[in-house]
Length: 372
Image 1 (cartoon, rainbow, N blue to C red):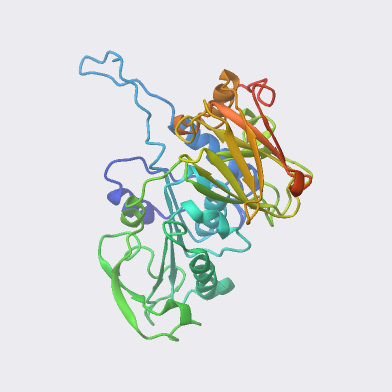
Image 2: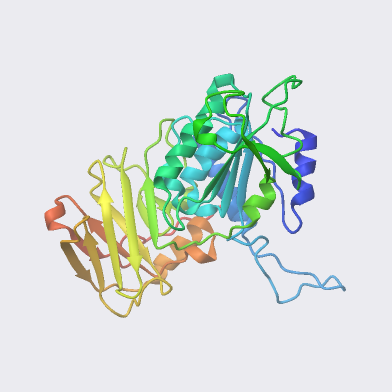
């Protein structure tokens, strides 16, 4: 939980929006990423996306009913245990967030490879050595740097100066540099940081978490997605309205397929070529679903599905637009940008004989009722 002052400072920078400080599922170190936490956050965001009628000055309901919040401007930030949660939540629920800010947390075994489309700022106190937090940020930053290319894996690393007088290095900078619009001294050569005082060269940067995140708007349909489904903790739970599927941007799998543990899928779509390229799958994931809408493809034309780094395996499929797919995908996330009209089932039991078929209404024949 954030201190009252932490909360007040964050709110002061939220000029046009809603700041929500969520309670943890339990009073434990992993409070924000226990299995049920994922359902809690999914449902919270879903409810914030509901349309709310506006009232005019006479208190009557008008015909204008915008979303309560912009689906493309939802952000996540957290300090300490909340920072631990940011690492996990942002990498599991990546398709929900425009950007993230992690402060004073530890990545553990979070799957940072999933942050291709979620800009993230990592912040830490120089002297915050408990649990190796101040060096874990360097490890995480270097991993993100390896992944970084073009517009993918945008990040900043801010290791803050911890004064000698700080009684608690874990909290010595939380109420100033991270949360107010002032410049702060941060370590310039963070890649060579090995502990307090190891890198004296500093530079002044505006490290305000809210202002940093506000620079970014979510792209709900990125052309390339990277999805590592594995987790080192208990498997995340998801809302009942997801039915038997698990969603991630424009991909889906059965929630608990026996062959998905430890699986990473890399996929790209090309609107000009009307194609989907499955660049890589690992650990023998054999079947998954590609969700499509009119913003991604010309659904009147055959869609080419290509597999493998060498792009040698190609299948073509004519898709059927179906209302059940639209209902199921809207019900699942409540997000107008995640309404899909067609689905392709990709089967890779033998990559040399990849098969694809039109999902039609078969895979979404029933639509679970959403809960608020």
